[in-house]
Length: 178
Image 1 (tube, rainbow, N blue to C red):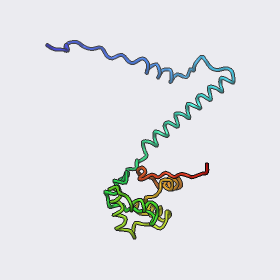
Image 2: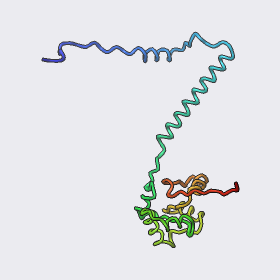
Image 3: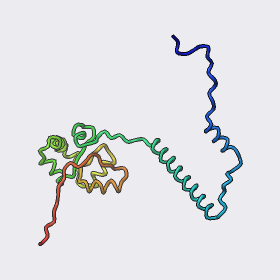
Image 4: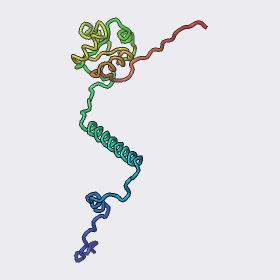
């Protein structure tokens, strides 16, 4: 039993009416019978087409930028990734609060990071924040510091980025008389 009859000839497919009609209307030089006569409707129509042009141009530009920009892939996404590798050195401000946190921590990842930093103390510790930021920009170095300082530095310099979340958080209060 055959599903298809070999002697039967199918008629040629009919052209789709919508694309043909669109092509015909767009290629003809005759316009619409409904042309705005009043100045106000012509202005509204002009604003509408200008708005449409801007929206389409913005969409096209953003799409082109999105498709052509190379995405940065970071080899380090967290403090745990930083602790597991040795290619990128990392450090803190010497005798700062971040150093004290790593020195006194009981968390294994941060303890491992402290062992790395203390074994290379003279090469990874910096005197101040400016020196740490300079080392980040000029070499393979990750600088660990307080989140507000990182946010300030990354807003001022587009070549810097913050990787990962907060390592530790502390709350402060202000005492006032009742």
